[in-house]
Length: 467
Image (cartoon, rainbow, N blue to C red; front, side, top):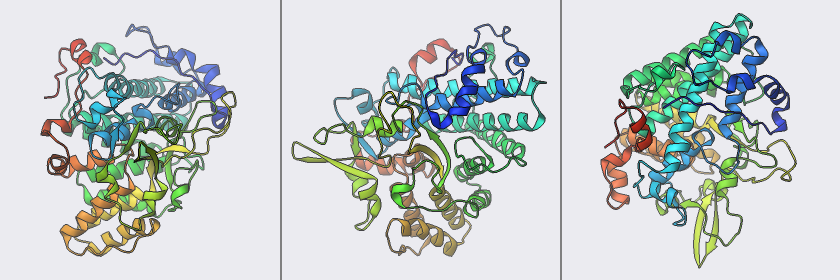
């Protein structure tokens, strides 16, 4: 199930120094042998160049070799989960997307199988290989070993978290030996969460002496702390969520203008993954912005999302854009606005970058955590910070129930289409059946989980399907 040989392809001059390193020394790492006994971690990481090439290759591979393929590494979880919830609908010409919008995803859906499940486990496999290779190597310094192990632990945690929120209990993969991984059963979600927290807390400790980075691409301790804040929120560990979010809010990050949020090295961004395709910007912009002003977009906002924006909310005009086709307006996602940054043969620095972690989410995490600890004033203050940037007045909510409703509303309009937030929020708050049952014809509780790919259940007799 999780034995993935692969080759990394490198394109973007923004990472020129890293790419030179990768191309010169990554090959022996990425060409994973099929025999569980033929790969020696000590040989893989003979020195820091090998180790750095390996971890850099994962970042680059998250974007993929094509700027038009949405995968779980470049925000496809937000796109597909946005369809499965009520952020987006899909053009009927794209049946593999429409299945997500109508919650009729087949276990044979190629996008679900290849671009979500398989890609996630590929990245987890690669992270495990880095951890094993670095841990066994005598050719790299202790400080550098700590850094790349921490980055790999973060990546492993990040993709396990996304898999679990899309599919429910999933195999918990922490080794590279395919004799183990190919027969892993579905792990209890509690066990997966414990491993995620263990990975992130260990990563944070390993990065304590790592200098803060001006570049947002490589994972640093701030990115680790931000993901921990999200995990603590999901686990209802309110005081820990508040403390983690506060560390970022009090750090070197600022809320920026709406049109600047997703720019490369934005002050709001905590972690970013830029494009690696020559001349292209983000996969989101290339895949989702129509090439003609009269086309029906591939995906477009549902009426439920459009109606969620308050009258003066600037996010509706800044982060959505309309095409008119046959007299009907279709509003498509426009958070990422740049499709190209040069000609097809030009390698140039991307102006925008996929942004999995940003400051606005930290304010919303802390707002919810404060509310759950009876600090209503603090919750409102954080909520209103996000509203202010959108051009809105302070919320009128005052009761506990109304403040919680206001927070969920703000998460809906601030984070729509990003990394599965809407779908995951509906599930973690236990409101998915009430909300989507009222909006979607034929909604069933079982639709809250994506199907386990059919081929995977054939290959692994211990992997059971979802209902």
